[in-house]
Image (cartoon, rainbow, N blue to C red; front, side):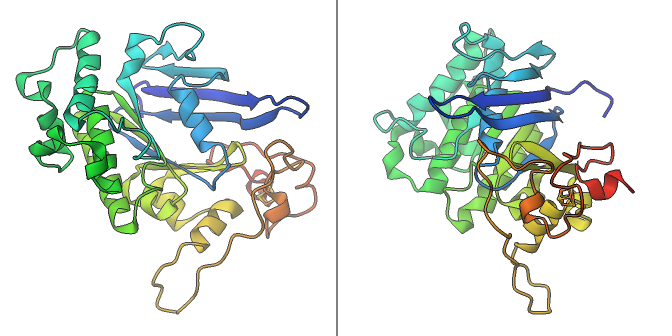
Length: 315
Ligand code: SF4
C-alpha cells in the first residue's frame, strides 16, 4: 500500500522483570503495520506475546522500539495522561464478563464511548449520539440499553463491548483474543461482525487470535507469531494456501478440516518454551520437524518474502 500506515510498529521489544529472575522478553523485536480499512490477523499459541503486543499498541504497557498511530508516537500510560488522540484506538478484550461493569446498565456504558468521541471535539451525528444506535449495529435490540450485562450471553456481551468501542468512533480497533471465551457458534459471528464494522467505518482492525481458521475468514493479511517474534507474514490467501514457515505449516496441519481423505488433524509437537529462557538460534528449533545443522545457533530474520526461516534464507 502506498498510503502511510495507520499503525506502525517497528522493532518492538517488551520486557518484564521479576525479582530474582532473568528478564523475560515477551515481545522480542516485532514490526508490523495496519492500514486504514485493513484487517490484520495476528496468530499464535498462548504465551507467544500476542496480547502483550496488543497492550503495547494501545499504550497500556511500556515498550522499547517505535509505535506510531496516525503518524504520532504512542507513549505508555503512566508516563503522562493518555493522549486524547489515542482514544481513537479502542480495544476489545478477551473476557466479555470482566470487561463490562456489572453494576451499570448497558446503555450507560456505551454512552461512555460516545462521550469519549465528544471529548475529542468530534460531536456525533444525531443518530450516533444514542447508545441504541450502536446496539442495533452490533445486532442487539434497542431495549438492551436498559438491561445489565449479566442478563446477556457471552456472545451478546462481546457484542456490547464492541458497541462500546465503536461508540468512541475509533480509527483502529484492536481485538485481543475477542472470541476465545465464546462458544463455537458465536466465534465466527463475532469475528465477522468486527470485520464488517471496522471496514464499513474505514477503521483498521488488528485481530489477535490463536485460531488460524477464524482469522482466515476475516483478515486481509496474517502475521504468525512465535515466542515473541513474527515468523511469517503475508496476504491471507497466500499464507493459507502456501504456508512456508514450519510453524505455520504445523498450525495449519492442526486445524480439523474435511479433506475427504479422513485425515485427523496433527498435533503441534511439544510445548511453547519459556519466554524467560528462549532456545538459542531459531526459537522454533526444538519443535521443528525440518530443523537442520545450525538452526540451534543462528536466529533467522524475517526476509523480504515474509518468512523467518533458514530454509529460505539459504535458498
Ligand atoms: Fe525449522 Fe531451522 Fe527454519 Fe527454524 S530456521 S523453522 S529450526 S528449519
